[in-house]
Structure formats: structure tokens, C-alpha cells
Length: 209
Image 1 (cartoon, rainbow, N blue to C red):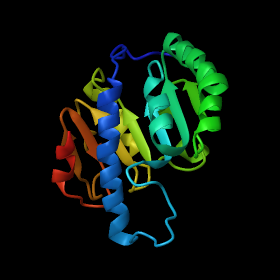
Image 2 (image 1 turned 120 degrees about the vertical axis):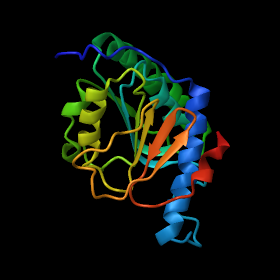
Image 3 (image 1 turned 120 degrees about the horizontal axis):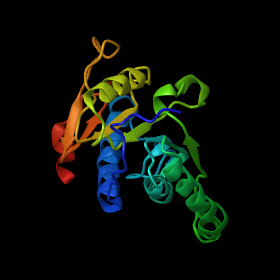
């Protein structure tokens, strides 16, 4: 497996990541309210918490995947990591989460906590059609990605459903041939960009950060 020379380890502080998820949750609630008014029976995700499937491309040590599992209502969480050493650390932490942390939480909390899966490999080779449910959110700490890698990432993300939230750091997802002609809207949150192609939501929603 060839590791691109532009890759390295660059972590996102957990507190900043959780602030970002809160912003995305607010945008998601606005998006759902456009076509689906809140139901009167209280069904669906708890307000302020994201649900669905979460992918992190470049999971590093895996800490953000665990944070997403603990603080939100995702059904499935998958972290992709191309560097074998970091993937091995993800697996060590995953064993601790799976057999100690998750079990204790399930005994004390009134909700389920998803298992977390880590995959070693190039996320650009990922076939979304083979992963089951399409992701509701994709996060990528792309601060060390060069322009060529960002363009390749853009092509890979272009096949996702329009209502997937795509979040990158430092650099927004560049326009690509596959993305041209689709409705694009990007929200700048500090140095983080949130891309959502289906709904035009007010930019002021990101002022929480």
C-alpha cells in the first residue's frame, strides 16, 4: 500500500470537534425541517445530536470516532486510516472501548452506543456502494493534504447523496467535474468547511463557533 508523501499525523482537538458537530447538528435540523416538519410523536434523533452513519477519512488515533459515538446518536461509525502504525493504535483503543467503556455506559445510560469500526487502507479506494447505508456525515482532517489529493477526494465524495454533510479542515472540497452542475453551499467555520448540496441553509448558523 503506497502512502502519499503529503500525508502525516495532524490531530483535531476533541473540544473543537464537538463544537463542530454541534454546528452540523443545527444545520441538519434546519435541513430536515425544510421538507419534514418535526413529528408530534417524538420519533427520530434527539435534538442537538446527529444520527445515521459517520465516516472519518484519516482517523489518526481514532479519538474523534469515539467522541462521535459517545456524544451523538450515530448508528454506525467507521474510521479509515492509511498509516499502519496509527491504525494499530486505533485497534488498541477500540478494544478498550468495546470491552470496557461501552459495556459500562450501556448499563448506566438510557440509550445505545454504537460499535466503532476501523479500516486500514486508502479511503480514496473506498466503494461507498459496498458499505451499506450511505454516510450522513464525512469528516476529513485535510490540513496536510496537497491540491492533487484534495481533487481526488472531491471526485470520491461527489458520488455521495446530496444530503450528506462533508466536513474538511483548512481547505474546502474543490469543485470537480462530478460536482459541477450540482447545487453547492459551503460554510466556513474557523478553518473548517461544511459542504451540503441539497439545502441552502443560512450561513449565520455557523456563528456558534
